[in-house]
Length: 490
Image (cartoon, rainbow, N blue to C red; front, top):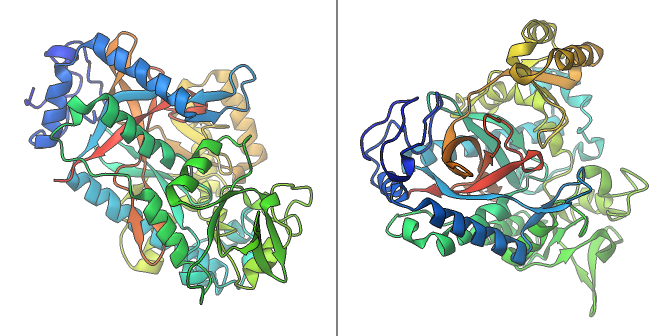
């Protein structure tokens, strides 16, 4: 099984006897680095697994996921609201060299995003120099005037960042989008690893895999490092919208991993510009809030006055420098899909470096050239609304009907500034356990970066897999699943 396999060829041994490698980059089978000992070991061991045994282990994993309450919520489905994230027992494997490239690229990206956010809320040099259009930033729905002039500790706006990466047919990693507000999914990274070590120990044995268990420690340290100046032993809390939130399991998980209180808005109160937590022993000061709700719900005195999820007076305490909010308010400007197109220029402007990880080619429909190109090539492009996430509201041109293309063309003409377009990337694939056996399914990767005094990237990240054959949509809300991501230590 150590021979190099060309794309489009079929494997001829064991479990891979019927595995057809499509005209995509396969994460396991048609690598350009077949000599990687760890990768070859995983591949060879998998080939000798029994298909029925893999199915039994998968069933055991799903039963444990239910028992542990590792679920997410689908609000659009009134038949099955709480679901487990389908888990595939065939891991995705990254070599040490690949991970080094990803890690350096993600750290560079996060550094540039933080510099950009500081600048647009202070001197606005990048806008005055015309590198990024001022109206695209100042008129952005996520731009927050309450943040203007606010000096966040350490210049850190994005304490937790999720960078979505895809891989093209040549094996190049490309950044698909940034998630700089409240990125989710890291709990699955850690729980997936726990599941793999319990259910597939014979596959992992002797393979030098970098661990993921220190995420909670790293996150707590970063949040403490960016607490208000002068606080010796900062109290960190995780602010959740509550049990009906889609990611509530993750909120509970992360609070437990960090050893901090999980609170809701009603548990906090602002007195004389300082934040306190209600406890059975009385009021206790709070210094850093890791919030998992959107800006609009944080403070009814500044944002949505009808919000019952936030804390009245929180923004005033923030502006006085008495509490740190992570991620900072107003970070949504940086992960807007229109701003995404300018990130290579933003990196060069602030760091005087070329991007380590390239963007996917992007056309901004707010600009005449981008709109004209998109309209002329609609059937060949992916078109995305700039403010949506989770795979909602997009058009995949090659899979769209004539009626859908006509409908989207009308939407583009009515509100071009709301859309960007990108070529359809033939995402890399990974062997995935399907009803008929191992089949190729498209995957992406979301590494998580944590920033305090410096930036640390969790080795691996969330590998999402499109379980429907041929689908390019990997989002859990759209029928996707996940895999454990193994980063080889050497």
